[in-house]
Length: 284
Image (cartoon, rainbow, N blue to C red; front, side, top):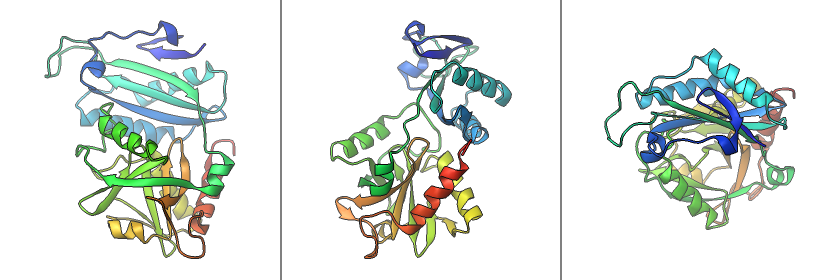
């Protein structure tokens, strides 16, 4: 029986209930976060909590807990699960109030957390890479807020699923943004190129980890606008997220990615980065 956290209580998920008037349900008025946990140790929790605070600030919702309080709840929730590798999901909404677009006053936030087994990419997936497709980015312009209002992302993820692809790589005004639930990185001439952390993308924690690991591993890394043409002529393409970790994209819209030496296969820079990432996990 899965144990979840809801507004100060740990209880079986079957007993966790939220009002139909919760603004998260009515408006999608809330934010969320997911922390990967390896061997019961959270990965880069400080960075995840910092992003949560940024998202809460972005929707003008007071953070209901301090970082030490969040850490205590996460640790307790992890300890109550029967599995070691976990994905701790938590969601904060503006709470329960009568249906009115304006913010309610003096209403406590709803805090819900659950933890599920963390399914990391299989060895076969790492070795073969994944297929992705492309689309125009038609979402709103505050993608840096990890909002629960995810309809645009859901539609893009389904767009990929309908085409037997793992992700949809999106472009806005001729430049790379991100994927529906992941960041996209480009490798050209041995240099990793990453879109800037602005309002057009969600600044992935794994994206940040890749940046740090590249510096430590001597891999050149440039954070700058990436033209769509650079994606199509890339030596390598990567998809990164807390659940995907870092994976090579080997086909894009059915076309092999990469130069003649490794077209349609994971490239050498990816293999180095994948090894660095695996070594950075807690308990590795």
